Amino acid sequence: MNTLNLKKIGFLGLGLIGGSMAKAVKSAFPETEIIATAHSEGTVKAAFEDGIIANEKLLPLSAFADCGLIILCAPVDTNISYMKELSSLTGERTVITDVGSVKGGIMKAARGYGLSARFIGGHPMAGKEKGGYANSDPLILENAYYILTPTEECPDTLTSDMAEFVKALKSVPLVMSTEEHDLSTAAVSHVPHIIASSLVRLLAKTDGPEEHMKAIAAGGFRDITRIASSDPALWETIFLENRDEILRLLPSFEEEVEGYRKALKARDGEALKALFSESKEFRDSIEIRRSGAVTPVFEFNIDIKDETGAIAKISTLLAEHSISLKNIGVVHNREFEAGVLHVEFYDGNAMDAAAALLPAHGYTLHR
Image (cartoon, rainbow, N blue to C red):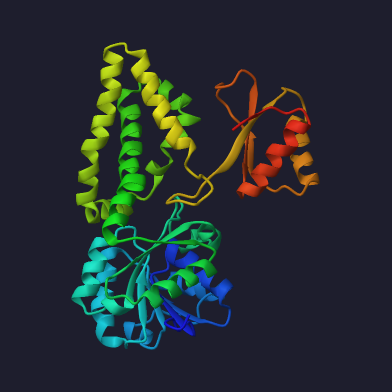
């Protein structure tokens, strides 16, 4: 990594992504000195006590002047204000990157502040519903796509070195243009968030006083609306930053919904089947083991008999084969004919091992 000096790395922001990256850097490069500042001194102190960063108190930007790499992990408008100051505080050997989910504004700022040759946009496609340093975890970066958006002035060697740095954090680098990135994230993350939020609002407005809809809103409904539980303030910022690309895609989504409406109105079963078949074929071709903007869930349901010790038998069987459980519990509604046990694992390998083991012992799985 000739263009990257990793002797000292600075983090401006230590929320979920910043904290997770700092922990991943500490693991991958234990000799690197890591310093950080954040919105709260309590956050900085927590990271110091965890042994992740070298400073115990908040730092001025001048403290980052000698860093080889600075990673901007604050909201976009704050990152842009940091860049303005860093442009005069740091030298040509200091590389600056960010972790924002929208790239247009930050890339424009890099050019405006004369940082194009040493700024490379970054976006780890990872996250959780709950933010903050307290929820940070380097594991969310593992196998997650990490998008890099270099400027035209950014040397190819820097892009290559940043890709190697990303690999060291156990993520998968993917180089895109700024425009392609913002359109792609609008399609796979931002518009789906609108859909999820709209579905939740539809249920809330349609449900009766007995709240029967809410009571049975499990399974598929909870799965496709998980991202509606994410931080509203964070998504407000993201949507306003990527406004143009989201507005560009919404009419296309409305056309898709209209296709289903027309088929239903005409009682055209063949048209409905074709729509479902096309979406199924494409959905089945998507690799689902990469991490995304929300942490993937590794889970399935198991048919169980209504008898004493049924849950204990399953947990004991998994423990005997060194398969760790993250969560286990009975599904209280009756989407299935028999009692159903919901089991969640920490990773895909554990889930696959359990999925091979349990049927061999007579259990039926629903994945």
